[in-house]
Every structure is written in structure tokens, then in C-alpha cells.
Image (tube, rainbow over all chains, first blue to last red):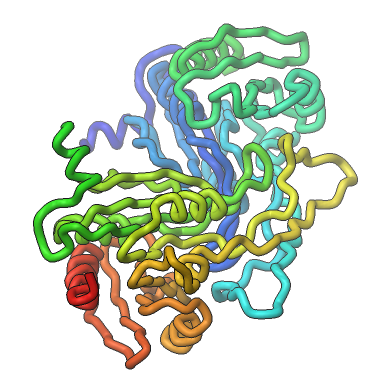
Length: 233
Length: 233
């Protein structure tokens, strides 16, 4: 167990040996009041599988995860958070890193003023209006130029329509090096399911992958990222 | 397995043998768009334990549950729902019943107009405002006078302040026979935890129970309800 813990910090043997990697996974959860919250249908399966696959290639992996119902991957440092702001803070604490893979489904918005006590339904009082404010953009923050920018920053685009167009726009807007685009519309079964069909959207074009298990997607992505990082150590 | 299924419908031996019981449990989940939703921190542990305890006393139990991460109780018919409106429909389909225990944390409000596609964050577009509308009141609907009203309708009050006062007001407002009041403020550990401290608020006063495991609360409550139903079959 002690050896596991040391290996989790130091990494193992393989093409990513000696590389520090940050992976985000799962949803974020944004409070409305002490009992109600806004969340999303991310299961964390894809992000956790990526953390596992990068660890299998020898990387030293920190996994920053929102609330999920799946086990922690072995040999990985896991940091558990709830909100987008907590996730950003945990990511920044995990830097410097050679590679960041932002697979979490981070809430774009949070409730502007969460209530300190449970909001009561009362006779004659109309239902509330929830005013949202923008959350910090974790992917754009990590991808911004600066001394702490990982060599490679990978984002995810989860869309229900116009997948590739949205992913290309996101690549440019966020300043990251690669977008893994996947369809999360209800018919796709992606959210919560065990399979995923992704498209790698980079500055030089789009690579369409077949439908694979999330672990197979993760292993192929890890090998791809190891190759991209290869000469830059 | 076939015998289990028959017993789940017919009930078993015990003081509630021959009684039909409806229990609701867990949160409800209300969509914002295909990937985002509003939920609450109910784990379903207390409601599921009540279904189990009523079944142990011989009742024929239908458990209507929102999304939870705990196993179905044995010998109980489980109906899984997401939204408050689906929960109401499933409850009405489970009538007639001798007893209804509404332990679910039903969302008081839902988003007035959920988006058909994932709402996109866009440059220069302010964060959205979520206009809420009232959900149907399942407890009040089940407790309303009528030919289908269960003999005994029990509600829960989950509060973060003024617990007993809120529970007394709820008892009167909903028209139910008993309120089980519990403190769900963050310090209490009730939401998601294994223990609970409840107060039975009825028309004749308040009974304070000690902190107990949720299963012990459920068994004591089941025995109490069996006694109340005793002579009325």
C-alpha cells in the first residue's frame, strides 16, 4: 500500500515515465441552497479511464474529480471537489504538469446567490428565478500562455448538435492543443454508458475514431498523447 | 425468484399482512437541458429503509424512487422515476393503498422551459436566468379527501431551521396525518448519512425520537404506523 502511494506520486515505467499529468473528470455540482444543486449527467467514466490509461503508460497522474459513483483508479492521486471553482483551485495546485486532459463536465454557470437556508415554498409566493453567473473557464485558464502552461492541454467537447463545428470553435477559443469531441445527445448513450465515439479535433484536422469502450478510447488517446509529447520532454 | 416476485406483490406474514403500502424515496431530478439538471442531496436511504421495514411487517409495498445509488430493498415492487411529475403519476398508479409514506425529497419547482439542446455558452451572451414553476404537490395530492385517499398519509419535513414549526405548518397545510421531521442542515449529516434523528409531528403533539440508524428509525416508524392502522382494516 505504501509502495502504491509512492508509485502514485512518482509514476511507473513506460513512455510517460517521469511525466506529470493532470486529468479532470466527472460533473461539477453547484449549490442552489443547502439541499438543492445543479449538476449534469457526466458519470466520470471517460475521465477516470483516461487517468488509468495515462498511469498505465507510466505517468504520475493527479485526477481532480467531481462527485461520481465509480471507484478511484489505482495508482493515481485523486482530489475530490464539488464546484467549478473548487476544481480550478485543485487543478492549479496540481501544476506544473506536462499534460492536462480536461474531461470533466464543468458547469458553465453557477447560481449567483445560493441561499444559506433551504428555500421554502410558501402560499402566494411565486416560484424563484435563479440568476446564473459564469463559472471560471478551467480549460481556457490552464491553456493560457504562461510559465505554468502544460506542454499539451486537451479539452473535451460534449455536444448534442453540430459536434465538429462546435469543437473547432472551442479549440480556437480556449487556446488548447486538442479537443476530444463526443456526442452526448440522449440517443448516443454516451453519458453514463460504457462506450464512446469520439473525434480528435486538432489544428491540422479531424480524426474520426470508431465507437469503442471508454477504456479503449482512453488507451488510444493516452498512446496518442504520449506520441505527441514524445520529443518535447 | 418467482416466489420473491409473488411475495413482493402479495406481501408476507406480520401485522401489516394484507396491507397495501406506497413509499416514495430519493430525490427527484428536474431537467434544465439534455445534460444539466437540478437535484437535491437526498440519498434515498431513509425512504428505502422504510419500504424494507414495512415489508418486514408483512405489507405489500410499492416503492416509487428517484435516482439513487443504493440497492432496491428485497420483496418490494420498485418503480423508478426522475421528475416530480413522473413520481406523482407512479404514485397514483399504485393506489389504492392503506398507507402512503412520502419520504422522497421532491423538487418544489422545475425549470419552466427546459432546453431541447444543450445550452451553449457564447461570447457576449449573459448567463441564463432559470425561471422556475411549481411542481405538483405529491403529498397534498395523496392526502386530499377522496375515494382513493389512503387511510394514513405520512409526510416528511426536511428542514435546515425552525424544524418543528415548519413541520406543524406542513401537517396542517398538506392535510396529512403525520409528519416525520428531520434536520438536514449540513452539520446534521442526515443527507447521505446512515443515522437520523426525527420528530413525529401529529395532530396531538410532537414525539421526539433519539438519534438512531435510518433502519432503526424505519423499523420504529413501521411499528408505529402498524399500530395506528391496527383497528382500521
